[in-house]
Image (cartoon, rainbow, N blue to C red; front, top):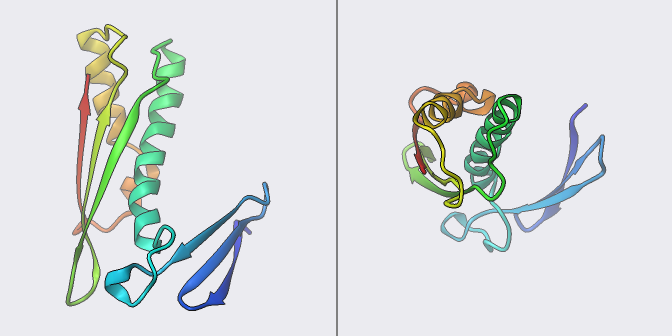
Length: 134
């Protein structure tokens, strides 16, 4: 088992990760009858794509001694209606500016960013726009 999710009422859930006991709260977004006081479930999908990309990049970069500490991602989720769903996730990754990446390192990291399991698990109709800025 990965987690336990409890419905707390008023469109809020509390999820507990079994292995670590870490918890997170979700709220429905304001545009879907919620309070928007926490990540929505669809926010977590978009955010988990960025986290997964960083995890895969970090694993691959460490094997080649390519530094990544300080990289950050700006995540934008675009919703569609009829049916309500995530239509597009835009992730703009800014790599640390104090590192002089070689052309080969940049090419390698761009390629690796496209291989995360979350991205490969999302429906092909969900557009993923991933960019890396060095």
